[in-house]
Image (cartoon, rainbow, N blue to C red):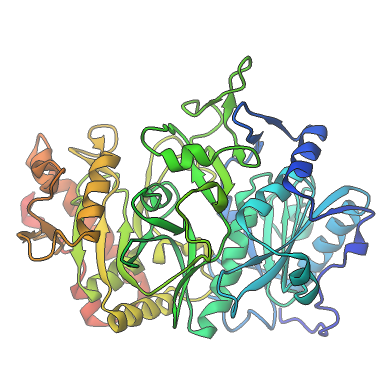
Length: 534
């Protein structure tokens, strides 16, 4: 259904819609409100600890885009970008605003995008104080002058205690995350998981930026002493934050970036890190960043000492920490860097067959970017269960891509070729067998591989080509067990490895078929099952 609303009708909400609002409160006040409201409690390290209730991860099947004149001919409709008609959305929106009118609401005015030329002013209106604190720590803060000069271009309205009625609202459940590109707003109901706020705005940026020749990316970024920029693409839990938080390099950002004509820039002003099994000796930057003002989600506290137990997964494996970049010592304050010299695609391979690192040609880079193979880790989305789930997500961010995936992939290919960027596939998953049999590749070994690439120690070194996946793999890396670089040799049964590798290669082939008539050079760059292995 195409909208016939006027431009005036499309204007987003006014704050007069709400009877009691608290606007742009400082961190300390939001902490006080959250505790006073019974939303959260304070940990011994000063972090605010909240539980997200029924949903401890995103609910992608409850995400919708309003089908109207702004989206009809541009959005790639389907299972990911589910349409909801304007009439259903307008009726639901009116009921939500009526419900929220007499409730205590918190308002944050902020920005997305560190590039001042393309920065997007946003407003986040939340029912919970801790959600507003979450948004304050993750988005880029605005000063008073900026608030007056830049009215919000997009508004997020989050009312978790309101539940949609599927039969009348056109939703799948009581939970709904709906983007309306015509009204320029996001409506969130029925879920307390704060990550929906962050990711909904990422979807907005993925919709807007390609028109400005800026590639929006689900990646972390850091920069070395010689101003060399590295990007780390990957789904949640695959290591983006951990690998980009390197004491020897400065952090640009941990999750979302744009790549434009002048280089890369961070979308956010904070980090959203997984903290299950967090150890200071392993990840000191993340551990030390969790202090007063940080938000911990679903982390269990010791009832006596109030110290966080990062090993307790009784609520979810997807325990999270949200904190501002200011809590990290070696950051790039501007959030801006040059064109990347190196890109890593992180694939947490639950089958345990991919090599831990491999170089990619531009054609292979486009193939693997479009494939987006990895394993979603437990708890990051609703319904994943307790074991990793092997999946393909185009561009390592399919749930957040309103436009056809091929458009983002072609932009990446063009930028890689123009700037001579080297691309590597990095397996942060299993070795010696699949999940449940093999072991997770050690973070220290992965970091040694990354540093070898960034320091140029692999240039000109001996390599071999994996016959099944076509990947160019180093024969030796200082600090990495040589056997690890030959995944077939790490399995007790090489026949079992061959069978598992063939199954994964065939999954790549079957998944890529959904992209239809793409360039032959891309298909040729992909894996080829060796069926004579048995």
